[in-house]
Amino acid sequence: MQNIIEVLKEHNIAPSMQRVKILEYLRDYKTHPTADMIYQALVNDIPTLSKTTVYNTLKTFTENGILVALSLFDNEVRYEYNTDPHVHFKCMKCNKIYDLNKTFDLYKNEFIDGHKVTEHYVNLKGICKSCLKEGK
Amino acid sequence: MQNIIEVLKEHNIAPSMQRVKILEYLRDYKTHPTADMIYQALVNDIPTLSKTTVYNTLKTFTENGILVALSLFDNEVRYEYNTDPHVHFKCMKCNKIYDLNKTFDLYKNEFIDGHKVTEHYVNLKGICKSCLKEGK
DNA sequence: TTCAACTTTGTAATCGTTACAAACTTGAAT
DNA sequence: ATTCAAGTTTGTAACGATTACAAAGTTGAA
Image: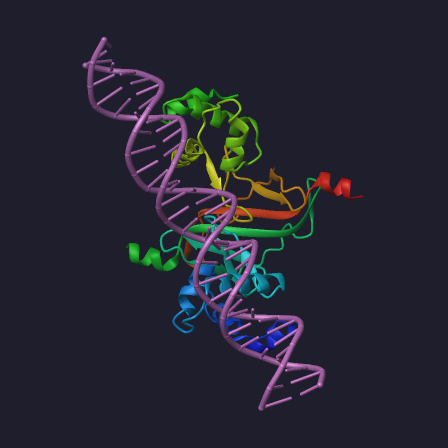
């Protein structure tokens, strides 16, 4: 379990209460939340929290490489702390996004049809395990 | 070359002038345009065209399976006529999106970790051929 | 020719996000 | 301890993409 305050200091970001809570949330709940989801989750804890702070903080973290911003599906930006390469799966029933531990080196730093590929995303959609169970 | 009016009739959509022009545009210019790009391209031709019409039409077409709406990168919705499975590549310099003719059957209609996969997207980012040439 | 159903249009509303300026907090220098 | 400048947070307003809605226009079958 990494120390959030250390992580922030390593990136030369002052560990304010808001920043610590936001990063803690992303570390502990791997739900790929949107900015609004994070705001809703933390506003009870920090009643003065502003949405602008959430957006500012997420921007800072993403620029510093602490988080990755993902536009995976359905035109919504989601944030995640874990930056190991992996495959994303979105359930069309419950809208949850799961990380799948499939490593996927295909196409990384290759040339395809003359284009240099530096990043790749594999996004899957379907019905998740628990929704399949409920459905029957 | 498919007849646009026939395509619309097959899907029980009245072939109004606006609908024909919009679908024609998507068939002829495989640029994965946004709704606004389509509006800008057609408003000279149809001066009374409304953006709402473009949005309505794209929604109708997508619901009927004539088009696919893609949230590939950077949180913008793009539309495409070709629905054969293929890989998308976005150039980070010129922002163009290329179709790559890599078939990609991996994960289709499979179960992974118990989740049923029905759709998959492979999105690549990098620098395209022509931007690479210019850069040097 | 008429009329109901469908289509298009423009305006206003909404949603997610960003801009901005004022208020607050912090920590180093005194 | 006090001060002050730099950094941080906050609320409001602005913005761009999209949707809701209602009025106006178009179409085609009776």
